[in-house]
Length: 69
Image (cartoon, rainbow, N blue to C red; front, side, top):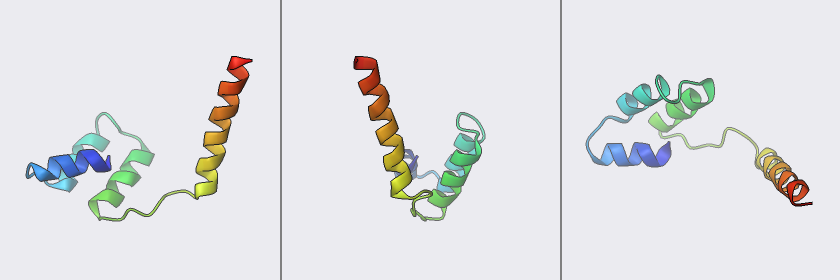
């Protein structure tokens, strides 16, 4: 979302307008809406702890290893 927002902003679109359209159509979920609001306010603090992200990566790796076995 950040990259898409930067691109649309470079073409002169208002960040809030773009994110409002995106988070009320294709990505109409609470998570995307929250990220969109943060991006519109130039707030890029992570919404989760890195340990939780690592947990998800490890789960994906474990699933891939199990599939190969």
